[in-house]
Amino acid sequence: MKSKLWLLYAIITTVFWGVWGALIEIPEKAGFPATLIYVVWAFTMIPPALVALKIINWRFDFRTKSIMLGMTVGILGAGGQLILFQTLAISPAYLVYPFISMSPIVTILMSLILLKERANVYGWVGVGLALIAIPLLSYSPPENQVVANMWWVIPASLVFLAWGTQAYVIKVANKSMKAENIFFYMMVSGLLLAPVAILMTDFDKNINWGFEGYGYSFFIQILNAVGALFLVYAFRYGKAMIVSPMTNAVAPVITIVLSLMIYAVIPHTITLMGMIFAVSAAILLSLEKDEPAVNGKNTIPVENPDL
Image (cartoon, rainbow, N blue to C red; front, side, top):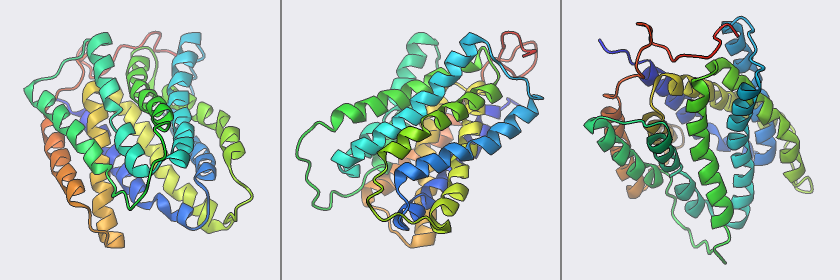
């Protein structure tokens, strides 16, 4: 039987992110701003990072190349999130989210051109369906919102490029360093950017400093953090051009289903179409193989693995 480690890790990621997506608005609706939620998220990266390092017996990778790759992964992800805050301040979410949700296109193109990745027929059809599903799943009705200009496209494009490139760099980093060390540097970069999020916070507004704010945020954001760790593992064993669109397409489906169960929110017809495309894509993408085995082991070669 063909190994499906990448699929297992991708499924775990989508489950954690799907649940996270269904709960993420709770602290903000309670009066805890998104910028401070980011700060809490940065700290929730610590527990899974410590567990990951324990798995490899605290073998830190301090090579210059590894530090650069790891920090690049983290800054692209966390930096993109901070830019997204500013983007949403000048444009409605119904325009921004479908746009940036297409970031897997960047990953696919970079993987095709630079990594020479290829997919079977099922994989290609699955990728296509996932790319159709993602913006549909991100759709929200305009609700009479008006955009004064198109300046939002500039920061949104930066997020689009950052997150698409991040997935590619995760794959590249996995070829020369351990996944656990990649996540460690993701944690470090997230914490380093936390002061920026604090500076972006409007403290003139009423902020809920109670447990409903930071407490709920911690337990919800740790779902995001754990999902991110398993995503790094998914990229280790799977093709970036397959893992990226799959996780981006399937996680929102879980979020929508849970929202229906918890909040009785009926999804829009366009969203339902996206769910159908996403599930179909997931089935087809699951037929892809792991990365080629090395010496009979289902692993990716790592330079100086004793680190």
